[in-house]
Length: 377
Image 1 (cartoon, rainbow, N blue to C red):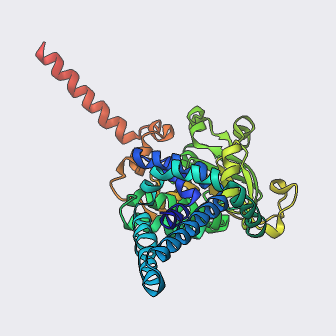
Image 2 (image 1 turned 180 degrees about the horizontal axis):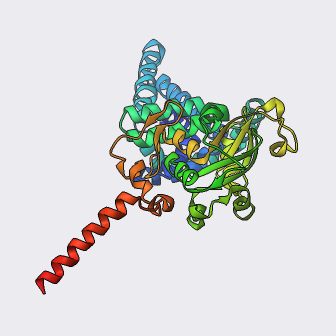
């Protein structure tokens, strides 16, 4: 029994027991809850079970020697100890370690109390020599492999496994430069722009919710324009963008290109902006974002990070591209955004004066209608 319990108990990792305890299987959780208190001091448990195993085997050998004696006693005691003291207990406890261990906890507690004066000093010596047993802690790469195995064995569905693997890879292995939108693919507006029909139409057709605004060069970003703020703009007024930003100015985070994605994610969560400017790490300064000499290499948004975690592109109603970097357009009918319909909102086109020919044709038509009216009455 002691041999089997030694194998069974010590094969139950402390971290694994905590996982089973928190699992959905009620019976296994109950067994794990019983075992955890005695499994915490692994060296004391090991010494107790080994002392008990040695004592039982020695006692059995002495008894068999007294009964049979000589070579026959040696053969019988060896066979009995091997079969009933080692093979069968270890075979059973290795397969049903949690269940057998849960039922054997009271017996083991009694053995710990009885053998404590001998087992405890040995256990303390092992603690000093070998260190504390903290259980099996997996590295990030091991967790990724563990997730892959669970997905292959259908313990996790593909979607859940993909998101969990994406979070482990993206947040800790990838750099900002790997998932950012390059500066050449970023739609920007100069500070000198005016919010007339042409500019508002460009903003609408680009499909972006945040638009960086630069002054002089694209390296000098002075603010970001939220397209939702344009609901208060009348294109007929041709409001200067500089004046508009004085009221609706929004700030952006400044990130380094070799910064980890996890660090950028924390800044997006705690800060007031979900968009960050990515600049060359070698040129970062303390005054960062306001220095025109710092080279801008791209922008990063919270959505970019989420897309890497779920490993899919997020497409909403206003997106023009599925993949901005490769210019892959959103499939489907987007006729509602075409130029002809947007022209109907251009007041300048609607208010153009009629030509002389149009006035003459309209007048003749009205005269004919009046004559028909008089003839009928």
